Length: 206
Image 1 (cartoon, helix red, strand yellow):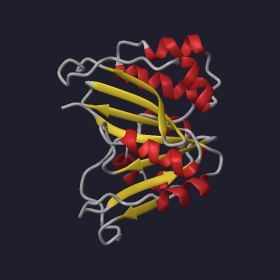
Image 2 (spheres, one colour):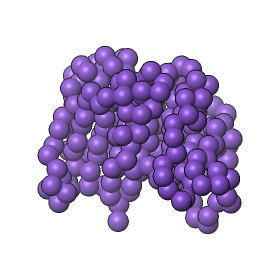
Image 3 (cartoon, one colour):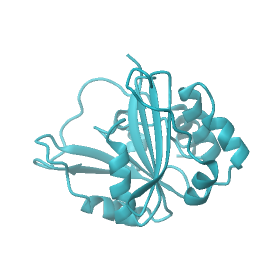
Image 4 (cartoon, helix red, strand yellow):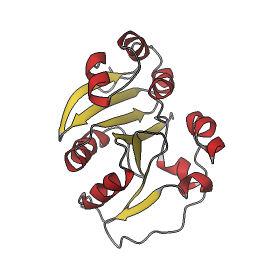
């Protein structure tokens, strides 16, 4: 089995406003509470990590968050080292989609390449269009994620369970529980793996 994760990256300097807006987002109709970490790990970005986030549910969540916050939202969905889906949502609508990976045929998906200029304009990126196109064209979806997070300076290979076991990092983020009793529980046994970006660019600054 390969790696699976999903996250949202809100293009905003106002962390408090994003957190407040996210709290207003209705909880899913699910008997199991949803748990989230929200906060700024890189300048100009607010990260949202959900314990159930993954390929298949972060696209709609990005649309909802972009509608509530008024800020563009980048979603990352990565499934089993087979599929990578990146989207950008603005004002409740997805305006760019990138789908790649060796498992597209298995899941009956068509490859899509996001327009580099649209990504740069909507997310206010400083990376050049040619460089961005080169990153998106990388045949390795793992390398695409790693190279993209370096280019735009925000962690993308990033998941909820990784934060759960990095006490220094989790203490810097807002922990939000939605639905059911809305009471946090003790962590389950096991360890997440904090990605290389956070280890190198964030934890060393603490």
